[in-house]
Image (cartoon, rainbow, N blue to C red; front, side, top):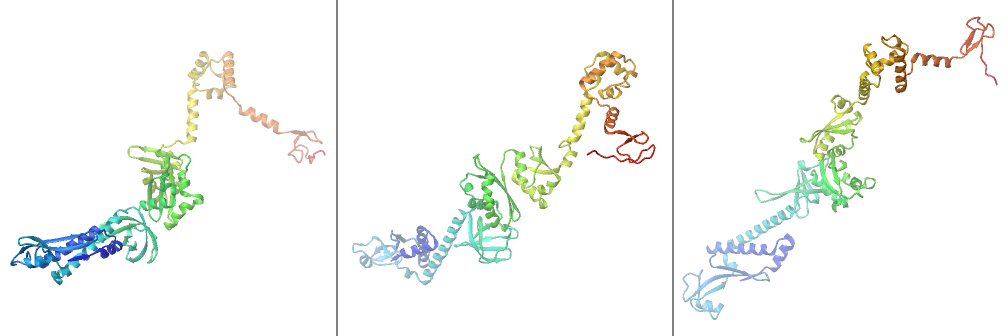
Length: 473
């Protein structure tokens, strides 16, 4: 008997996306199972199909005069009805009618066909979505059960578990939703679970590819993504083209490109920073939005670094609940410790410039000890004998007390004065104050008694007459 399966196969191909070969093989297996259930063997079963998808079923039998076993034998008369050239002893293929298999056998064959087609559909879905792992996919929320969201993907249902949902995001049936395919699994019962995600860094990467052509075209490379879903994402980008600003290209004019992604992520903060091979620059960039004063590499082998910031920038560097520094650690691949300038000075990580200046002055004074000064030996000898070791001490005793120093002659005093005048600018406080005071105070005579008065006097301190100073016109 012949079965024309052309129409059935084409329908299955279109509706179920199942290959023709798989469908035909499934049907042949089902026929063989039905034949075996009816006759107890398939040793003499022959199934053939042509290019037009017409299946022919035969039983291979021997031509005999008298039939002893009708499963394997056919009478000569019946054989000649099929083929007039048939002769006793020949083996021939006798057309077989599936209806002869019995209702149970036929029902069993149908079940096998449907089950096998169902399995083939699952295999096809499994293969299709396995190839889509990491890809962005759009679906509609079908239902929400507990913390799990089930999403209609068109030809199958995806699962968005709680751990793959971003914080604060809420969905209801019918909502349009973007996800990526995280994994595809087969259960023990043969079902397919398509696991979706909105928390993966790959999800961020795919969103960037959609919004930013330079990333999709690989002109800009995403080096690293660090993310705390629902709160903050840090993205390090790089380009080998000097004329392109990778951060500016990602953010877009007035921030429009990154704004679309922030909207998709329900307001999640996004920091786009420039990637650098220099760990100091990379660490400073990774701690955005904090402004960094300095980065000290504490231990290069274990990737430990200390970042120094102003007190006002400390909270920005660490972030709420330590989130900013946590993501910066991931992005830069360094373990970062943040210190204020005061803490860094205490730990000798940096120098206090005021203290350094004072120390430098002391060191310079120390360098100017008598032995190092360009003085004649006899002058050095006199100064040492009087325990005078520094130029500061020489200036303190000069000029009034210099002659009282043991061993100082007029010649030594004159040469020492010349050395000081040539190398140092000395201002004597008393004289300068006196000169300043003399310049500031102007004295006048009292018109009554001639006593000295000043502009500040309102009456003469001698005779008591009242005084008023007036300016000439």
